[in-house]
Image 1 (cartoon, rainbow, N blue to C red):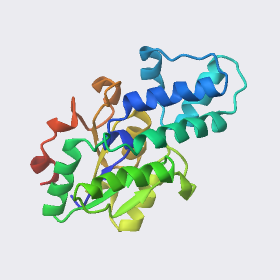
Image 2 (image 1 turned 30 degrees about the vertical axis):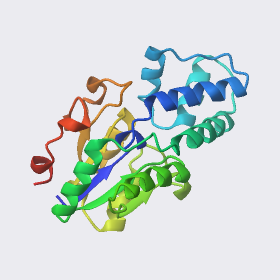
Image 3 (image 1 turned 180 degrees about the vertical axis):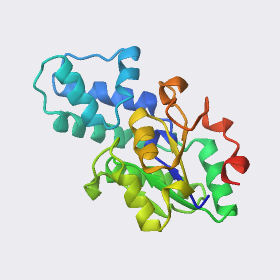
Length: 219
């Protein structure tokens, strides 16, 4: 293998509860009488991108909502909390990055979320002594969101590798679909509010990142 990619912010930092609270804080600020119970939120997590989740839910309720504005509020609240030192990268990520470095494998963070979010999460890894990613993508690049494969294609082309030589870690249905479309090998790692079966389209799924055998995966 020539590259290891983490494809969503949730594959690096466990933010399930924080994201959940951020959505509800935004709903309240925009005077939306919405509440996502856990089953509803788990369904929303199958959709990649917060604004898309909001617009999809509004459509189901036949409501006109400025999803972009609501999501911007959600993101602002989320970013403030995300910067807390209490929120740290998942331990398996550091293990994977170290293994990639030992194997001479390039690494990437292939997200289509906001640049500020991507940067904060990447900086948390650097603060723990890990090298920065060889490539990072974010919403500011103007690439279509997942399940469109453009972010991955951009990353592969930038690093000069074939998709078949890449391993991708993803935590949501759209992310898995985007990576699979390119021909990359995908490992599904569900977040705290997701189910392993949701990611069955991946080549391999694990109950948690700590179950990944990096030596076998990258060897």
